[in-house]
Length: 186
Image (cartoon, rainbow, N blue to C red; front, side, top):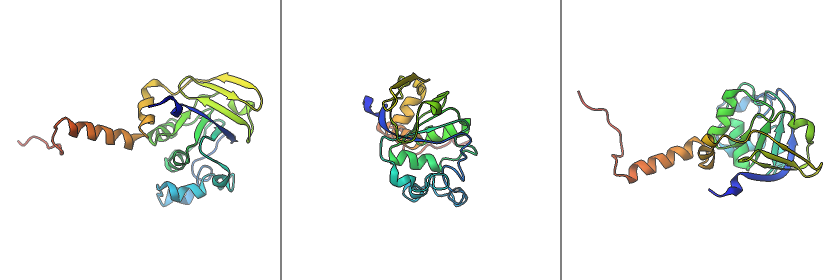
């Protein structure tokens, strides 16, 4: 894919430490009802901690968060972030939350130590997810953070697990393999 998937520039939306998935990223009822459709989640993204977030963000905007972002990890909020064309940088997050974010194709960097101290909501920020170069154009600050690992880039480029599986299935079927795998009979 083109390099433009890896470079984002937009407004910063800053959140602090310990933002839980339920009750922070999305309301708890989204998780309880197992809502996974982006169009149904988007109006409720961050509504408990930043009401009206969905009307203030636009594709290319970047969520900046502190430590332990997305505690009690689920994928629902990451589905909405990806659908909105947002990026995410945080100081840390639980492994399962990181896995869920990558699994839906969200561009994310999770080891950005001190990121919350160099930006504020509304700042004009830019990130190159391939190199890890972060620029806050508003404050004239540049930092380098660990980029998205090369081993995960293809998965993100394809839109997460679903995109990767679709490509795998198409490749498998185009090579003349049977449409269904069957276990050998005994």
